[in-house]
Length: 114
Length: 115
Image 1 (cartoon, rainbow over the protein chains, first blue to last red):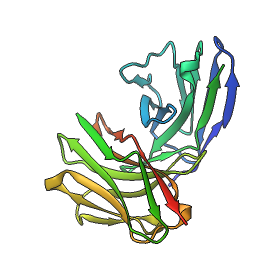
Image 2 (tube, chains in turn brown, purple; image 1 turned 30 degrees about the vertical axis):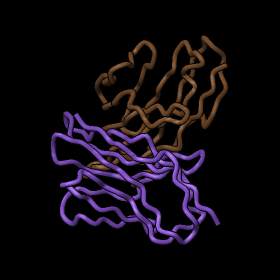
Image 3 (cartoon, rainbow over the protein chains, first blue to last red; image 1 turned 90 degrees about the vertical axis):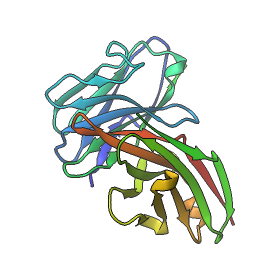
Image 4 (cartoon, rainbow over the protein chains, first blue to last red; image 1 turned 180 degrees about the vertical axis):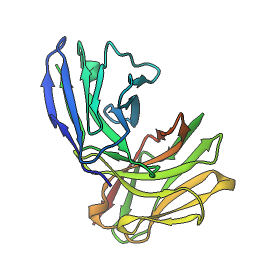
């Protein structure tokens, strides 16, 4: 398995500002993923971050709103830009380990936008 | 394309009674299937997975699930749940997409265990 940490664990932000969420893994991984979990809903994939290449965004998500960095094999960041109350969600990162088909999840970042 | 349907967004059972959480899926290729659990204010933890082989899969904490291809189902059961099993449970299906597993999650079922 993998140990995944996220910072911050929660934050309350004002409309129009941006927040960068960090995801750190205790082992080198190729694929990292960012999900959004809106209140009372399931997980929706935002983007896939492959080290050494640009992130791949799912339909409905754009790089200007959710820029992602993946500087090395153990770290990634997701920025939520120009936030609005609709961005209030839990944001989770996950990883896929070599030889495994399941994903391992971080504890999540609970974001509230006022 | 793939999708997951979880029947029942909330399920309540008495402690010690059988719990059954339903999951049906659709997939254009042989699927990998998963159940994850999310405790309050935590991330998702893998309970069990089906890839190939034996259709009855045993997971952690006494949970098990049976893959039924003819019914496109992957229901989760536990014979005697404890109050500590109260959490949200997500069924998921994945398929290879450009070198990685693209996962689609169900909407989740919140399990309440009544003492």
